[in-house]
Image 1 (cartoon, rainbow, N blue to C red):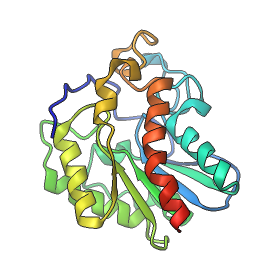
Image 2: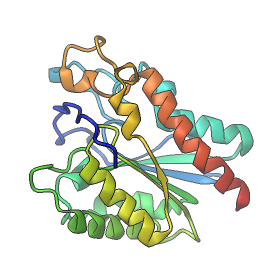
Image 3: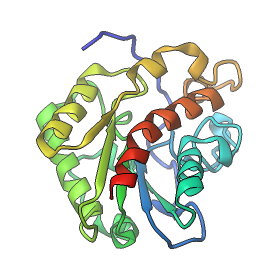
Image 4: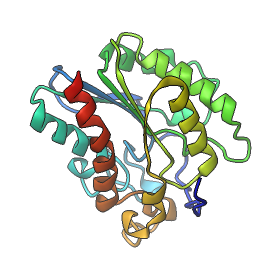
Amino acid sequence: METLEKIIHTVPASCQVSRYVRLLNDSAGSPRLLFLGNSVTWHAPKDDIGWAGDWGMAASSAENDYAHRVLSAVRERFPSASGMILQGAVWERNLECDCASEFAGAREFAADALIFTLCANTPADTFRAEAFVASMERLLSYASENSVSPIVLVATDFFGDPSKSAAIEAYAARHSATVVNLLDLGANPENRALGKFAHEGVANHPGDLGMQRIAERILEKLIPALEKR
């Protein structure tokens, strides 16, 4: 795997949101998209780091974050499509956690497609690939418990950690999931919100262009898979 410089990620993993599951639109139609992500997917306002949004950090608006962009594009082809976010930063920092009660809404959503973009807040100094993959297996199995043959997309690390990305690719190989490569996107400064936020960690998140490119990478894999269902 290509070696890329890791991006400084200093947004605290704790207290990113006050609840872990939220619907992206009022529709309960299908196909149903479940985004399992962290602050890139959804972060509530946090004054001490200069973040005022309640959507994917550091997009300029909810409509410009990658999850909303993906759902909007899918709804152009499937007008009744609905989306939900499972904000999993709590899982990233404690791979042994039993998050069943917190994540129950995601399981009940019975997603047709699961889009996994977690790993950034898992401590790098204690990272063990097998433990991470085993926890991925538990989480994705739980989240898809009520689903029927769901599409599973798993993304490599936007923030440039090759070890975590390799573990995600190992999960995909074991479970016939589809890999969405984001490693090169984060390595390109134009995809981050540099200069738009004083807090370095916030600024290193994807800006509008980065969010657009993440969405494009996901849609490239997702749309054909949905059309085959």
